[in-house]
Amino acid sequence: MLKKTELLYSGKAKDVFATDDPAVLWVTYKDQATALNGKKKVQISGKGALNLQISTLLFKAVAAAGIPTHYLSTPDQQTMLCQRCEMVPLEAVVRNFASGSFQRKFQTEPLLPLQPAVHECYYKSDALDDPFANDEQIIALGWAKPATLEAIHALSDQVNLVLQAQFSAVGIKLVDFKLEFGWLADGTLVLADELSPDNMRLVDEATGESLDKDVFRKEQGPLTPVYQTVLDRLRGAAHV
Ligand code: 5GP
Image (cartoon, rainbow, N blue to C red):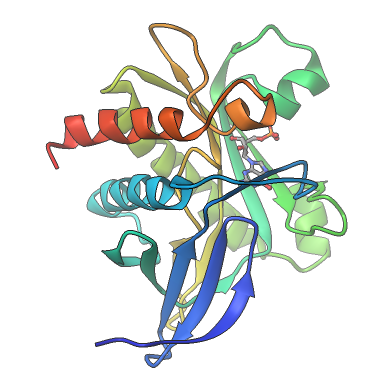
């Protein structure tokens, strides 16, 4: 059996450990919610397990559509095994409807449909508060090559189609989301990080209620029942 070894990285929502297989990482999902780049931090019992299960279900759906991902397996309620990859230092955001920073920036009406979906990249840096970066800035600063950016945009569009299908089947509108990508040792670009309500905005089509981390950011009530609703609906649709 695979053994967890040293802690490589402790993030806001996950810890990443090495294993005795150099190609495999052991990722634990934390019972912690953060906002405002970690300035607001709260322990939320059960959140890690919920995000892990939602992420598992969505990574499987993305992989089933032929999109390469780092996902390997989910051996227990807190752990995801992933392929080790070298991360591209970018957050790739896709927006189907105006919300969050986009809505604030352009003062649009809430949830204005965006056609085509808007792609934005942010440079991953806690010290700089993840600043927006356009393609020329990213290329000039060496964070990604033009072909990599093109691949990130194309893969993000494919992921968007898969996630939109998953959520619309259960009465949920996929407003926007953030993806991260990484390189496997063999040079394949794969979808990495997580796919959970921590990094996407979801709105109940029937009630207009938020079903994501905005509930925590805006202090609208407890988070775990909301994440449980998302999991239950996705599971119901997947007949898991
Ligand atoms: P916004 O730019 O409107 O704040 O965020 C757009 C989308 O990307 C939202 O779904 C949000 O959850 C996600 N997102 C943006 N930055 C981060 C981040 O640093 N961490 C996480 N988990 N999600 C992010």
